Length: 74
Image (cartoon, rainbow, N blue to C red; front, side, top):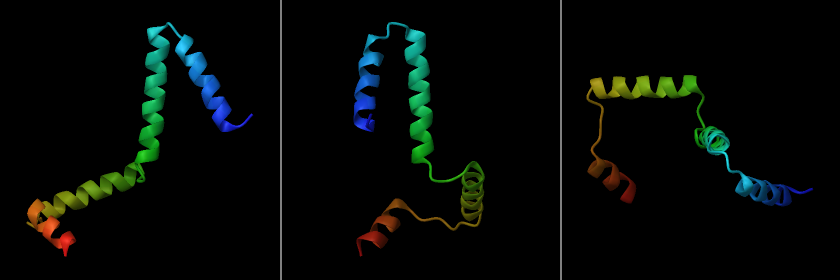
């Protein structure tokens, strides 16, 4: 069975659900899966990036939105 067929069968079964609890669990699972795909960084990498950003801010090494737009429009 190919992936497209599996998706369609899953959707059909999902539409038959009447349990709000089951739907909530599926929503949480979907959100987790999407989050894993959308965040290309590990937790450690994300923390390091935040720490670097905070250090940049404390040093005054920041740019305004206008400065960034001008830089990338050139």
